[in-house]
Image 1 (cartoon, each protein chain N blue to C red):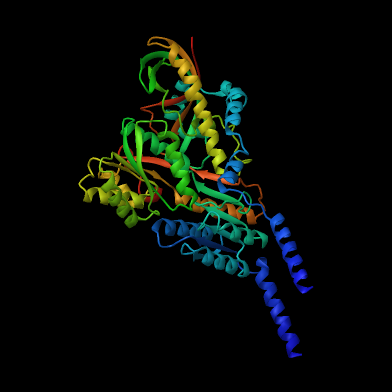
Image 2 (cartoon, chains in turn cyan, blue):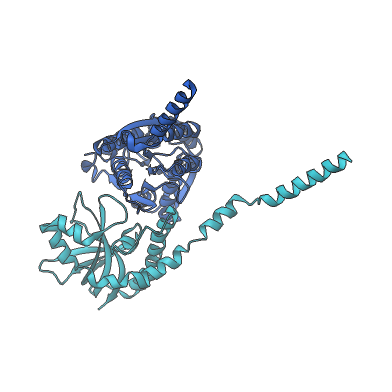
Length: 207
Length: 309
């Protein structure tokens, strides 16, 4: 009789134990948690809906350069944005000009609506980092608790520009063409260098 | 009667310990290790800022041991510290300690390293390791002209920064199929281990063009191994941190680049946030990235170790 009781107790314990825990493969759990946030859809929506209303407020590159030369502190305060704390700040800018050179990784543009000739580089290869995500100041980090999600948003935004918008643009341009663009410009506010201005394009077209 | 008086005294003492408003304002600084100058700098700056804000401070050294870290948290809780400025030992293993403080009503502000919990810490102020590595990766690809063989030395495999740096680097470099990673090994963020690992890799892979290291200590170790093998001039070394010896090595052309972190910014912000919390503010972002800056020979004149001026 005692043996029966022990056997019943063991079976009961095994039954309860089996139904109390769930064993999953670690990589399945990691994959499932990664799938909770769709950075790709967020990025597409960001580029198509969240970001465009800010374009109208973007300063012209020439206007920004003038402000950075005459009152840099104020220019950074009023026109730059960044999610991260620190010296690296981003400006949403617009401009129009003439293509002077087309290289493997970039396109050189001479801005036409300036008092003085200003040459800028439009990046077409190395479109990475947080410039496009942060430049307009419309990305809010507060709802995000996962660092990977925050990083993936930038990666996906850049990927759309790099793999979809840039190839279409490069196909239709040649030296001498007039273009207009909206883009993001990174400047270190502690060590301002206006010699080589590289703008990451967001939207661009021939005019 | 004597017993009653003793119990009453104990009760009163207990109340005093648990009621911080009666005692001095105190912040605890719990740091993963004080055996590394980077973390000493972080801890000292957190303590200095907290003192400036009117708090008594004490620095606790966890010696990279979560059990010791747990003791420090218990000590901080019973000793009436009102906030903990925290540099975790382990992203997963430290969660329970942060939760313990939270349950005791003590806010925890993480500095530089994160814990894998969305809400245990009040806020986590972290170097943007991923983006810093993306900036290094862009320079890496440009320096190698998009092709070559390279080695990656990883940090501690249990640390989130190890993977954030590696993932940031690969998010760009992996788009170039002619850049081939011929070896990837952990050297635990340790200079001597990096030298040994690199020596061993060079036996099997003598034809490499670059080494990407998850921190500066490993970059210096890798450089030593390369110098010993007579390859220091041919192989470009890339680090991460902004340590003093790498800043000097960039000036001398021994190391190609590093990602400059700003421990002072993180430490001071943690102290300021803790002070704001204790004064009633509750609306803090869960994660606050601190920008990492690319440092090369072209801009090295602007920088000194740990981002200091």
